[in-house]
Image 1: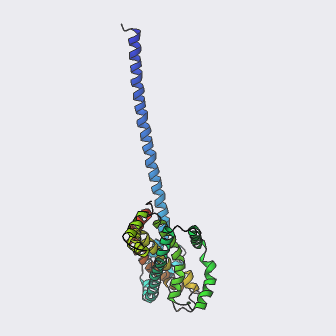
Image 2: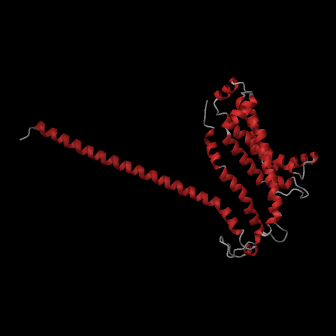
Length: 307
């Protein structure tokens, strides 16, 4: 016969074992449920991302596929994503677009170069020298990014007309750079502000001046950000239509965007030519984006370094 004390002891041990078992099963169940919800959330975010990607890619896919169908099919009662009849006749007049293509390429390259030539020293000065008016300058630069281009189209046209810059590549480069330079300054200032001051001090101890420090130390360190700024400036000029239309009065200079617009006639629109030329215009932009992808990816985190 067990005494009351031994019986209570065994009962207590048995209860503790059952409680421990229940806690273990409860913990495992909670962990499995947490893992299930975490995976479900990941799958949900993935599906949302895929849906957004499909919405963004649909116009591009439609343009490319539509460039291979006859113009008459665009007026069919029922629209179709896949062309019913494949043809290359829309690309037969591409040779006439070589001139506008080269013109746009020259404008975009010089726009990116001018944006960097002005933006890099300006961003370095705003990021390194702690002047009292730096915050005001950054605010004014930021305002230029939110002002619609249509608001300044007429004043810019009148100014360029008096300066003799209408119907010229130089005028279009300056107009596009007016948008590319502020963006470059804002982007590079953010990255240069995150560079440790010890790098600049070490360069000064070695006898380097500000310009030598900028091009030998700061520029290599912010290479990814510079590539990203140049890419955005290039793409902005590549797809520009507002300044190409406003500052070109006699058709002497015809960028690619304006050339596409000329396919629109008074009585009938050559949709096949528009789609084919638009597809050709996509190729350089896609090549640049793919080639500079790793620089943009690195540049997204380059500004996280703090002194």
